[in-house]
Image (cartoon, rainbow, N blue to C red; front, side, top):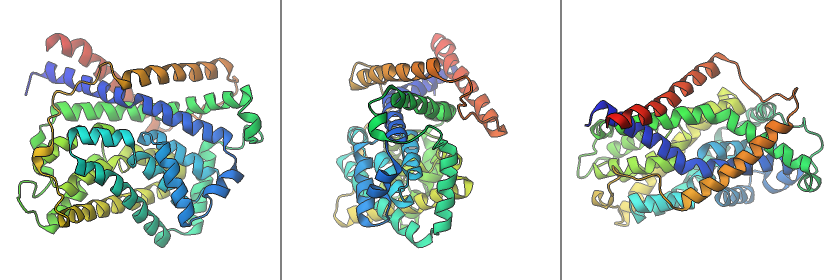
Amino acid sequence: MGSFSELWYRSAYISAGLFWMAFWAFGLGYLISSMIQVFVTKQRMRESMGSKGPKSVGLATFFGFISSSCSFAALATTRSLFTKGAGLVPSLAFLLASTNLVIELGIVIAIFLSWQFVVAEYLGGLLLILCTWLLVKWTLSEEFEQQARENAREEADEGSEGPDDWKKLITSLEGWRRVARKYFMEWNMVWKDVTVGFTVAGIIAAFVPHQFFETLFVGSSADSPAFWQILLQALVGPVAAFFTFIGSMGNIPLAAVLFSNGVSFAGIVAFIFSDLVVFPVLRIQSKYYGWKMACYILVVFLVSLVTSAVVLHYGFDLLGMLPSAESAKSVSDREFFKVDYTLFLNIGFGLVSALLVGWHLKSRDSQEGEGNDSSAGEKILFFLSTVSLLWISGGFLFGASGA
């Protein structure tokens, strides 16, 4: 352990670095979400994803794969699909595919872990969708789904911007002005969650000893852990991740550390899949669909990911494909800021964001609401996000000078 100033600087560096890695994905996801909300008509969406059969789920999975993005942006896009008439199962399939069947995530996994985890990422994503489909089919009532759709439409403020003739909108300045407004609103809704989440991730990575996480996973030091230990490790991953948000991209380095210290294949896979069962995601889901539906989706995802992780563990074991802990690579000295594709993507989406946000702020009506929430919860979150920004700034200003 280093001095406090050194750890402070490192936590700030990691928080900023994780956001740097994810910024372009946020921008891409919110741009797609905004365009769907403005240009995709309810009739076209119902025709492609409105039913609950295999074709609809398959299309949703494909659309999610080609529009892969970070969790927050995928949540917004999923809400857009659901409010436009898509069924809950196809909407959730889109969400799972866009956060788990992700090409860039597979690349990061290959760098820090091993090819077995890359295979598990994609097979597991499909298993997650299948398990979610079955659970929702067996447990969800039509009335419950319809109520959630109404809540989502109220939150999205749909129908207040005139007719949704996408052919006219996509070739008009008015249509793209609406996209700019939606893009601004998406960022305005989640910036506090993102700020707090990445700050907490940096603090955990810098200040919390790795041994603490090892003790959470019972049986991690055993050569041949029992079934109940494998199951418990698969449960501990998402439970430990619930109160923080590191993100599917950012938690891969920590997953490599855990794996190198003996955590099972199932525990690591469950940990990687936990980006949709964390508190900030639950909170956003509650704003979209109401707390009852948000908690229902969380339980469905939790059961699905634990089941998928355990099935993958024993499936790989049966085939003799379980990786060894030696395949995990060190992540303690990761360099975030360098000249690579992330730099150019961030520059590109930084310019796009500046253009859309600036256009919206310049052209917005003085009577146009931005959907701000003045509830006690929002005020607390605003306070925490302010403290988070001060913590990161202080880490760079004072921590670096004392390091």
